[in-house]
Image (cartoon, rainbow, N blue to C red; front, top):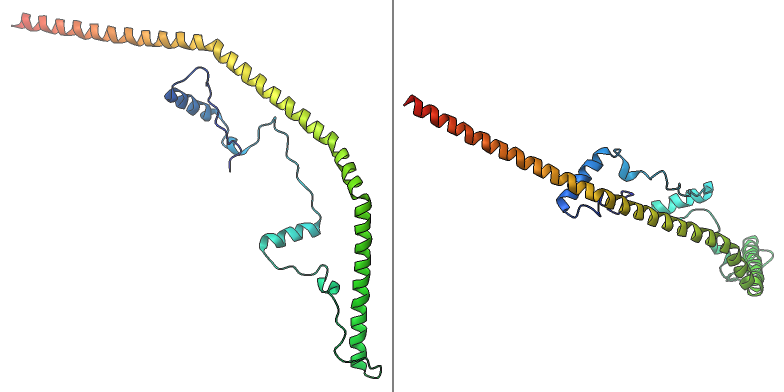
Length: 211
């Protein structure tokens, strides 16, 4: 997709004729570099390029490829645990192992739920204040961006005003040059007509003299 998405006439305030604008645009494009439509203007600052960690980059690639997630946190560890269907028997090694696995999962879930409850309490106690502090820290950045945006708009308006004034200055000169060109072409045509008339007169007299 080209970076230039808005069309600007070369002499929008002087040439109202669409054909004239097309001719001027063709001359302007002839002077532009080959890749002007895909290259940023030098006045445009370079865009921010985020630097992701290798793990996050790999995750982005996985999501883009539509592959299933592998590794990471095992969510089944935090699911509810059902006790083994058969009763506890310390003498049965297989049953004892089943109970140990169930107890291990229960401890994991208990720790997770306890930490989650603690985090929810902290969020309820400090979440609003932390959010407000975060907004307060972002306000200087927003003010800086607003100032930069206002300055850019002012620069655009100044360039547009200068462009309009410059075209208004040369408008009269262009009109005079065009009139001179038209008058010159008219005189050339008149001279050609006069030459052809004189030539026909000379040929007519030569025919009369020959007769």
